[in-house]
Amino acid sequence: MKAVVCPKYGPPEVLTIKDLSKPSPNKDEVLVKAIASSVNTGDVRIRGLKVEGIMKIVMRVVLGFNKPRKPVLGTTFSGIVEQVGDAVTRFKVGDEVYGATGFNQGCHAEYLSIPEKKVITKKPANASFEEAAALPFGGQTAIYFLRKGGIEEINNPQVLIYGATGSVGTAAVQIAKHYGANVTALCSSRGKELAQGLGADSIILYDQEDFTKVSDKFDIILDAVGKTSKKQCNSLLKPDGKFLSVEGMDIASERTEYLEFLRELFESKHLNAVIDKVYPMEQVVEAHKYVDTGRKKGNVVLKMAGN
Image 1 (cartoon, rainbow, N blue to C red):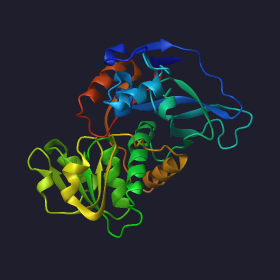
Image 2 (cartoon, rainbow, N blue to C red; image 1 turned 180 degrees about the horizontal axis):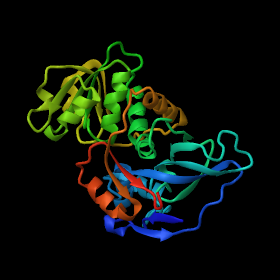
Image 3 (cartoon, rainbow, N blue to C red; image 1 turned 30 degrees about the vertical axis):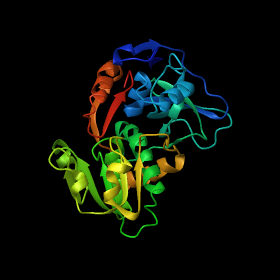
């Protein structure tokens, strides 16, 4: 099978496509023929070891000191179950599935074998494989942080999403609206139309005004891109308000429950998968270069070879 391999940390050009052995599922695993994956900020951080301070040491311990211990990148997938282990009960051959592998990675390949008890479930029936692959990274991260902020317990929550047009931000705006929030989206002028389309109630354009000067107060401020701080946002928080950020030691959980929730939202048309660009596997270097610019809107999807 063909797979994207990262033999060492570095710029996008370190990535190569190699022929690797097709995995065989263990008795508790399903073999998925991957159709699509995503290239997200997590992937480019792993490839380039783009983290600062103590997190760089932590990442080297987790991922490998001098090169990735698991060289096949990719943390989200969608595809079709091709084979199941003898002990598998949740899936059958032909099921259309999607999921996430976290630090185990391995999704930028034509096939992957994953235990049925890990983060995998049937994809939304009305989603394309590209859309399904775009949901897990931003969607799960948004669910994790919004719930950590207590959005389910707050009556008419006032929520500010900093970086509302990225993978996490586009999901967070829509999921917060599902919870009945009044959502203020903070983005650039280029993202205004997208933020409006996502259902944001108010929009602050950071390239036209200082967001810290607004008079509104928020129950939850979610920094979906890791570019601000609690200190900078303190004046915008209500007395019991919470500041949450994707940057730092708090890494969002990945759970099958989250994927099932995302599936429900997508099938009921309360959530859209925002896709900026779709690249074939052969153009993975270009996909990483584009994500590295920091200008993507929503998600970048990678289609596996042969699809």
